[in-house]
Length: 87
Image (cartoon, rainbow, N blue to C red; front, side, top):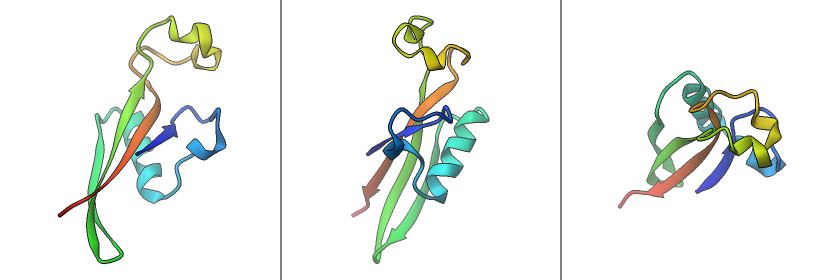
């Protein structure tokens, strides 16, 4: 599981999307999708990859995170990227 930035201004550089799947996931979330998923093969094993949004929940969020003040409530400011091995 990884935390991803969707705002375009990551607080931590390690939260930038690392591959095409994560970049595509952020793009789809920003266009209104609720999640992005795919089953992929990594080193001969199947994995479920999923990206889910972290939205602006309340106006109060901007009290500590002023950089999110221009985002609408419900708009994704981040995401969680999951990579789960399939047995």
